[in-house]
Image 1: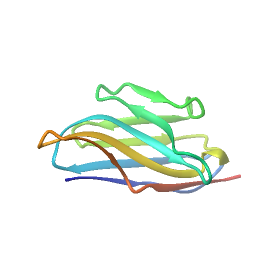
Image 2: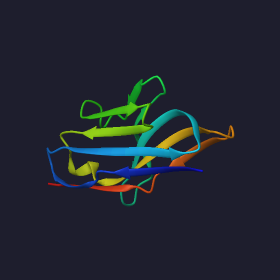
Image 3: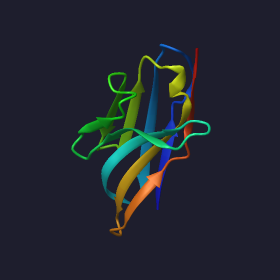
Image 4: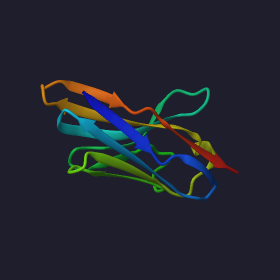
Length: 120
């Protein structure tokens, strides 16, 4: 069994910064891509930033230049540093991890979500 737990959401003023963290644990053999997604009220979930196992990042256009994704393969963690936050960044942020388990299952695991609220 694999669990993914996020932390670091909260309320921040526009222009401020927040850092989200996500840790995967359990019967993990290896982890492929790790990513952050978000879902604003009334909108579909969208990809914010994804990082490959080789630490190559990809960003949504709306966050490029403001957000930085990073991972620690030794700790099975992925972080999202969010800078120059805007009210339109307000959403529930979800961590997603592509895992190969110890029993050779390929799984996409979602975290429970963490709320980020940016006030104007």
